[in-house]
Each structure stands twice: as structure tokens, then as C-alpha cells.
Length: 311
Image 1 (cartoon, rainbow, N blue to C red):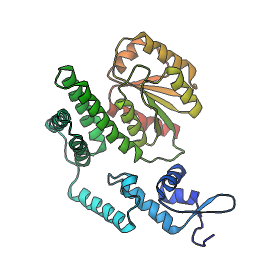
Image 2: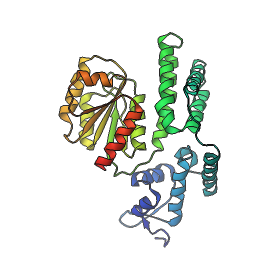
Image 3: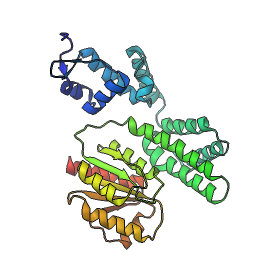
Image 4: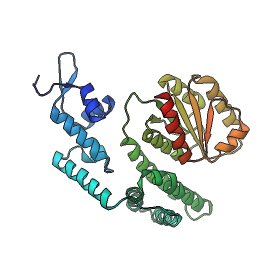
């Protein structure tokens, strides 16, 4: 073994802030570094490897994905990091007013009507850079979704347009989620929607907010049977389950599903119900493990408080 390849993965994890899972994933999928292995198969890394991983992590903070930067030189990574620092100092996040939100939503709607995927992507990325993650998620994305939904309801756009918008927004949000790194030791949250609840963006945003507040979140998608969700919570020993709802307000199946999950998951686990119908469900259903949130800002505050209790 090379004298320089002397650092076990635990040292790398501590010095870079990356979890062992992420380090191995970057190594195996992207060949980000090339550790040596001893006779027992344990990985050992050089100081240069550690510096490289640290630079990659910092570059993700500039809004780029690991796939975009992993094969770039260290000098290029440093230039991106320095450029981002200068830009942040010279161009702080813009204040966001209602007029700005509506303009962004209308621009996105127009691009959607014209099937301009790249323009839709550019609109989202520009807003993210100008206003930051919290405003983007809590205000801008929510308003875009309402705008698209209303346009479909009024007959301005086809189902194909709505599906395109959903795909574009989902791809954008998945990129954010993939770039949020938390330790493997962080408390776990599962995010999903129940069977017949096919609007999944709320659950995906919840997963982003969870990671942003220090939780290890796993997004398991939408239209998932209650028994499967409960089984996943127990198998993964999740501290929290977030269920996102869009509609309907009055549904016997939802009551049945919530009852099943409430009675099946570990007694230490809790359920967060989010979305438009959440407060209505709070009045209708007796779910002792359920906590109800009406918007993403409230969810963020709740997760911060709960994180301090379980970590």
C-alpha cells in the first residue's frame, strides 16, 4: 500500500463532512477518487483524495450537480467556488414580492404552452439563483403549480402540457434533493403519497426540506399502498413519515389508510400530514400519531424542532 494512501474512510468522512455512503457512491459511480484496499478490503485514501472530495462538496454548493463537476480539474473547481463567493457578495439574494412570483409563474406557463423545455428549465434555475432555495420552494414553485393547475382547469392547456410541467419541475427538484448531503447517522424520514394520490411534488419538496433541516430523507414516490408505506417505515426504522395530500377532502379510503398506518408503525414513529386538505383531515380523522401542517414554511419549522428532539 502507498504510504500516502493511509486514511481510512472514517477520517475522510470526518474531514469532508460527506457520509460514507456518498463517498462510496461517488467512487463507484463517478470514479471521483481511487482509494487503495488492504487485504481485508478496507479502503484507504490519500490527503489529495480528501482535498478532492472536499472541493467537490463545496462545488455542489454553487448549484452544480456531481455529474457536471466530478471530472473537472481541481483548479476549475476552485474557480467555480471563488466565482460563487464573489457573486454572492456582489449579488445577494433578491427580495421577492408578489409581482415577481406572478411574473415567474406566467413566464413558465408561456414556455410550457410552447413546449419549450429548455426555457422552462432556465426559468426555474434563474429563479433559484436569484431568490434562494427557501423562497423558491415555499413561494415560487407553489405558485407555478397553482398557475399550471388553474390553466388546465380553465382549459388553457392540455393534459400533455400539465404532464410536461410536472416532469420539468420534478427533474429540477430531484437535482436539488440529490445535492443535499446529510450524514448516514441523521434521523430518518420517509416521504410519500398514499394510493390514488398521484400528485407527488409536495412529497418531493418535503424530502428536500427534511434534508435541509438535518434529516436523512428518502422519497419513495406516489400512489403507494398504505401497507407498503407502513412496512417501509418499520423496516427502515424511520422516525417520521410525511404524507402529502392534494385532494380529495372527504374520502373513506384515506381514513382507512391513515388508521392502518397509525396502528401498524412503531409507537416511536410519527406521521406528518401536509398539503391543502391537511387541516380538514385533522378535524375529520382521529389519528393519534399525526401532526398536521398547512404549508412548507410550517413544515420547515416543525422539522427543525423535531430534529433537536431526536438527534
